[in-house]
Image 1 (cartoon, rainbow, N blue to C red):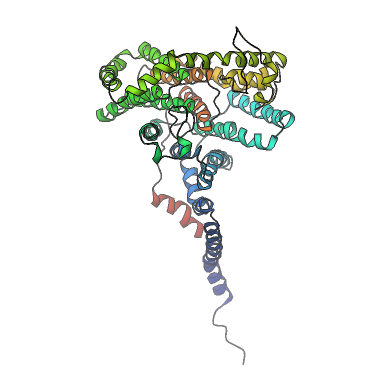
Image 2: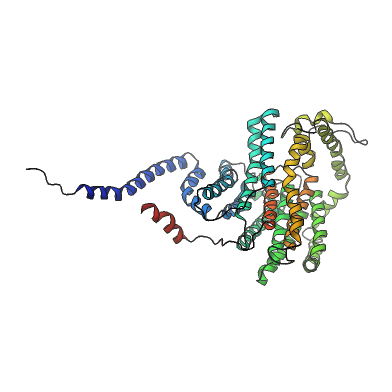
Length: 495
């Protein structure tokens, strides 16, 4: 007697089709559990966390790419100069991986039609940036004696920061996005100032990488120049946000934050930063005298009290930085190096001596200047733009600075069409440019090499580009709810 089939073939097929996703999920989960356990045991816990959060992270970045900038601002300053292995792993994820991955997600989603968002068209500034990447990579591999190590530095200092620019540029933020950014910038300002003050008064509780031996304030970014640039970025951005806030307490908080940022610029004890801060104050008196005077009426008496009390030693150190013989010598010794930078540029004006090759060749051009002898050791030119000219010539310098001049011209054309007040206004655009000019002032006295400080340049330019190209009707950019994410991505997976 033939056996009785308890289940028909269609029924078996239906059961298999229903069980298949669960079996696949079980196999993948088992594999991931073993892999994650191995990563944790071997000390690669950051990579384990990255794998575990990859899918939800992809979903969030696809839905709201602006989150990448917020995460970067929150974590990148804390791990920029962290020497331990765990900190470096976080740095790899946050600075090296997050910005380019976010750009790829945005572009792929747009190309495949997954996203309903229409990305803004890129143009000449972005083409110049691509050209700068191309000529710099050629320079590294043709002229540098350690191209692999130099490429890693170039990636951290240029490629990843340019990806941050593209995230902002492609997303085209609206008012809600800028409010969220203001909250993160406020955290950045307060956290950097807290670390800076702790480095002065209780340095023993901080990592050694966050303490400057020359008695300058560096925060967590490891450089007084980058710290001062961070203070100026935070202060001017929060001032913009304060002028556009309806809630009085938030407005007052952000105005006081601007004053705190000014204090941070002073505490950097960098003469270039002080020059940049003076430029900002003059610019603010020109465009918004009322609010600056209001802040000044509160801050100036407070400064007087602090200067004669808790900050007396810092005021004495600032005076020494300006007027002492040691300070004068530290400024004069830069003259032969500046002269060497000019001579290097004149020797190879078009292609330069190669990316990151300044200290390799500058000693050949050292000569006394006005009785000041050449330094006995290689030192930086203390001028980012002279170094850029010497290393990459007219071609590389032109491509690097082209986005700056492009958005400056576009800003002049757009200015008359903008209202005086509001998120997208003349005042906000001018304040954004004040940061760029202040940043350039710092770099006239400082050769910026810290990746966080270099990234702020591209973030600032991208915010200006977004203001200039801002659409009349901004899109909604509300954060997705957990329920909507579950229904959209998880439930559909098993249908």
